[in-house]
Image 1 (tube, protein in one colour):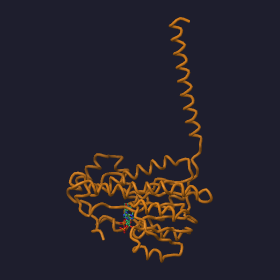
Image 2 (cartoon, helix red, strand yellow):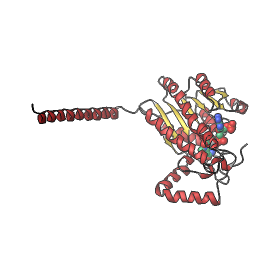
Image 3 (cartoon, helix red, strand yellow):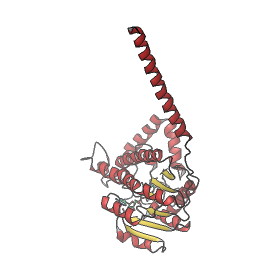
Image 4 (cartoon, protein in one colour):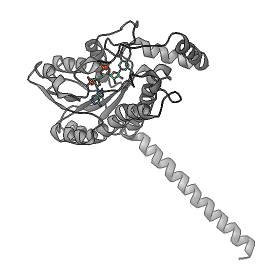
Length: 303
Ligand SMILES: NC(=O)c1ccc[n+]([C@@H]2O[C@H](COP(=O)([O-])OP(=O)(O)OC[C@H]3O[C@@H](n4cnc5c(N)ncnc54)[C@H](OP(=O)(O)O)[C@@H]3O)[C@@H](O)[C@H]2O)c1
């Protein structure tokens, strides 16, 4: 065999090997596509739920509706145990304990205490500093507020999800499909400049949730993004009209997971907002910026 023939044979061999690799990768992609995503309809009846930030607002609404719809047990947690007495008295199925979501030891203890959980509701959130300028990237003295918002609203729910997904999978195998519900916000869809730290953290949490959903797609667990907005709580902007009470909000969310929905818009406000952003992103942002400088959104002073 002369040199040219040898080179030709080597090239043929390389092409054959490359062809085999492509065929193998297409075959494995086809096999993966053929692997069915399990049914992810989640029933609250008989579920064992853990709700963070359950002492008030949206979190309390979740606890009440879980009880009304036949949950077996509800771990109603909060960062200040003194605020949990009222909720503990609601029903003997309620178990309360302290859980500051940013505290790693609290999170670990929660996973040990609540080892029968089938439904994790990451509801607790930090709205940002009471000092307006500290919620921003440029005007703030430092980035501590953004970091706190990221810690409370993105990293801590992610850590809780990492702890509870294996627990939920273990418990789900003997009964109901389980779920992680991450309570996001319409403020995840665009930068709300009055609450930049909060918006930044909720946008990051939206991607964190989407990533978890992709990773667990072939597992019997639903990972849902809940774009909450317009619920009558202390977090509702002053002058805004509430679309729902916390109980009505929870009912919408549980109706949605019963149908295996993983992207949930309980009220029409955030979904309409998403449509407007998609139609004209620059125009939407311009209107938000103009409002920020002329008539900024405000919420009631923190208690
Ligand atoms: N209301 C709305 O229209 C609306 C709109 C968009 C999104 N959301 C989302 O809905 C969820 C609930 O908000 P909300 O309206 O009910 O507001 P909220 O009344 O201010 O409730 C927030 C809850 O989070 C708790 N929390 C804060 N930091 C915590 C921590 N480190 N560890 C544990 N708990 C902590 C608070 O506890 P303390 O009582 O101890 O402060 C409180 O229970 C949040 O994820 C929020 O972003 C609400």
